[in-house]
Image 1 (cartoon, rainbow, N blue to C red):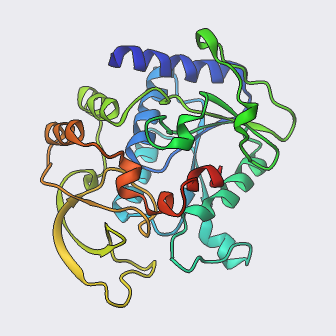
Image 2: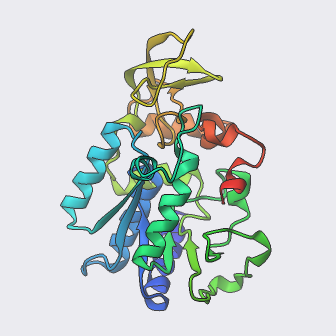
Length: 288
């Protein structure tokens, strides 16, 4: 099963390399983008990776994840572009949200970076099991000149034939992990012995409760009035902006324990731990 998923992803990377001029890989230091990078390196070994990396930095990232990102970039001699949300706020082109979360603000810096560097294919780590809007995506997902997504413009992908045709100014988002599940990702990480940031495993951390989730205190503005910081043993199922990524109570300190925990879970990782996807029934689709 993992061999088939790996083979499909490698085929997608090679297809994009042959069809597009300036692809880039979105890399946040989260587990899905880490697996995606691992697959890309495998697809072109022993040659160097022919794509650059792009990270949309909210300024509210977990320090452990940024340290991991920089270490991986140096280890593999990769090219990294960083699109900073803070720079857009400082220039007055974006405004802080009342709730402090910056995840919804990433769209403008991302689209500006795509236009400036003329990227025509953008690899993302989205999986169809994560969220309803992602379940609508094809592997090759066309975006218009404003970066917008229209599900009615999705193209059929019969027999793994991918259509990358796009007009000037448009680009294509590419999702090599579309057919993977969270459990597949973790089983592949175990098989390939891929290193992850330590926050994916159980550790003791200061957190506070907000809207049913354990959030980490930080410069982004938490905790607020009436919110009490506690020390708990937690881990993260997904990683994003500190202001909207919740931890889960867990004693899973090894990859085998994490896999067992996920196999027993009935909540998707985003449904359980991402506040920005709880803003409305169609929060992610609105951002797309």
